Image 1: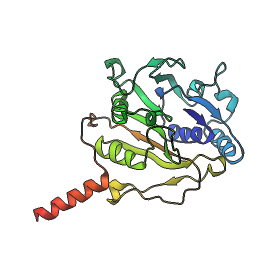
Image 2 (image 1 turned 30 degrees about the vertical axis):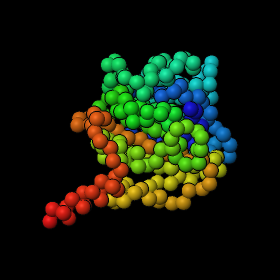
Image 3 (image 1 turned 120 degrees about the vertical axis):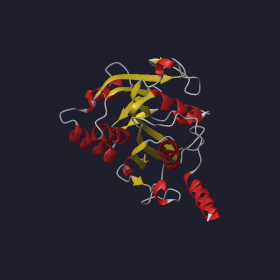
Length: 253
């Protein structure tokens, strides 16, 4: 659970382009990695200058530890919390994402940042439904989840189908960003998007060729101001739903 240069770029992109702010909670207290080398470091420098001219990487670092509260404050958040099942890294909120969510955490946050936490929670559906409960209406989940070549990293690798099938189709969220980010520094700019199965009726298709190495699914989804699912809905893969709907239509003719 750490924010490298490429992931910091994606966060700055979505926060700035969609004017996000207010109260953010990190799932897991994220460590700061920041600039690495060559192409990814150059992309980070360009993005920081583009959105926050005058700031340097040193300005983004916590002064007394290696965590990320200062980064989020500098890019526009008023309050920065962290949540973990344990207090081993001094998270400000100790809470099991797979447990029952207390009332005081319902609709509390403007932004939830999952920077590589939910794939470590075996009861993943409960974790995602709790995120839905924690977000205010109009709030945004920013997710950076392992998608490919992360064998033995956690219980799961997360695919674009989760974004489109669960967050968009089932809960009614708006997809602000969904792309595949190669994590090797030399491939920092080789971001690949996918088609939306809710529009095409078939499984997400890559809109480019992914380079070798580990890949992160980087996405952002916004909770509707009203009418969001409550998490109790049945969830099915989008292309199968399309087939079932088509079959039912044919049978009814």
